[in-house]
Image (tube, rainbow, N blue to C red; front, top):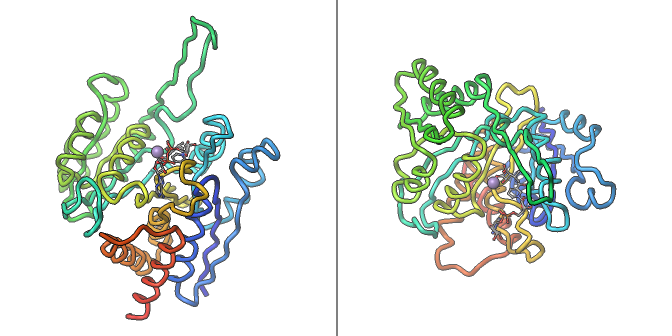
Length: 351
Ligand code: NAD
Ligand code: IPM
Ligand code: MN
């Protein structure tokens, strides 16, 4: 019989609240012959305060023994900024070579927000996940003095750029519109920009059916709001992709609905699925966080593990739920989770 070994990192703030609902939906949608084994990891602010650890080697090793990882969010106001973000989340992305950070955006019918009613938002950002300014390649001189100098060097390798660009072309090729937009800033970041552009052009020759386009990142933010329909697949650098996908979330279903997958395409290491949003300390503990982003991340996880039908059921459930939300009273995290559990169960009963 089939099984899924799932590592769960609830993390901080609203992380545990939304992950609990994601797990309920996962359990409800899986066929009865699939055995779900979960192992929960106590990582994040609580652990750091208790032991000073962010991600010990033993945990990193044991995480490897899983088919996938589901993560809530990390980061807490009581921990210095960057300690958990770098020491836990980025450490995982780097150690497990999650070079494809997949962040789809769809405006589901009925969704509120600044672009409500536009039926044509359906694109995916392929964000590079292991390079750029995220590598920690920088430093500070004369720290704390009036002569302080801080650098944060963006690392772009031909190897790293080529593999993510090729992945993005393959995704564009597989979609009906077959369009790929490179987003960078080669008018200012000339060295990295030249590498990205030349790789983009060279790899593009292998995909003659894919239409290509280039936008500077600042202009891309305009078009994400004014003409989101022009995007199909976007490929971009780690930091640009981070910023663009919060914007993409805001113009589609909102930050509470944006899902992501940190993918290790060759399967050497487990891929990791998480909402695009963070730990939201401003609403943590109120029971009002929207678990939809986590539930849609569960759909990405299911698809990654080959459970396409179940992934589609989860997405259909979310679509149905969002369609019914307009004008309805605000719900708690758990109420939304229950609504989605009911919907995936209904859809399952139909087939
Ligand atoms: P955030 O995404 O946590 O919150 C931004 C805003 O969106 C807040 O007003 C928050 O209430 C709202 N929001 C986020 N998720 C929501 C949800 N599911 N439902 C309803 N509203 C939601 O971003 P931030 O405030 O910049 O960061 C807070 C902490 O989270 C920081 O420590 C940051 O480093 C960390 N962070 C972690 C991740 C991650 O673990 N992947 C991602 C982003 C930020
Ligand atoms: C995200 C987050 C992370 C990022 C931080 C918390 C390291 O903002 O997943 O989008 O910048 O990638
Ligand atoms: Mn982000």
